[in-house]
Length: 273
Image (cartoon, rainbow, N blue to C red; front, top):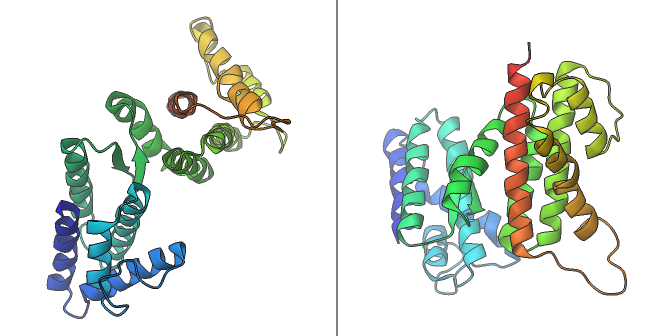
């Protein structure tokens, strides 16, 4: 109910400032995206197809699947941010609304947060605030769009319990960050370079300064064998006759490790002359 009211306030602001724009259109378009995704004609059985506002609001209020509810929240904020930009509205209001939604999530003990207009699962408030969110903000910068998409995909898989895919997307994101840095610095690397090769190039180019190398030796070991090795052993190759599974705590560790590596690499690159 609180989220419904937050969305209503954002849409009412648009209606007030732009008389030719109607909130009902937004509800219809948001609902259409979700209906197509789920393969249904109505999100809620209690409203007709033509009642976009009622259908979407009732969906948020009555949907039993947490994942689908989070889909509704995410799609709403992505859509509204786009509309606010298109109508030259103050996007700060969207950011304030995101903060309020996150405060409501924390208030009710909901293990999700909105970060960069995406819903991500939060298992540790400290890890999310100090590692994951800064990593997402860095990846939102110029030159890291591929890595950002892969890191967000990893969080999407984590939400859905697809732990093997978490490891795969974490590795892709880590490799993309290093490839982006190499491209920016014009460091020669093979197009199909592996994580180990990319790390070797970054160390050789003193992305980690030589006088800090001894202190960061454990970090290099983590970058070479942490996420990539976990992926190779548990997620990236054939699983043989017996199905393998990746425990949730290993997938969470991969996410946090990747986020920490992203922050370090981006800040180290920015510090280079």
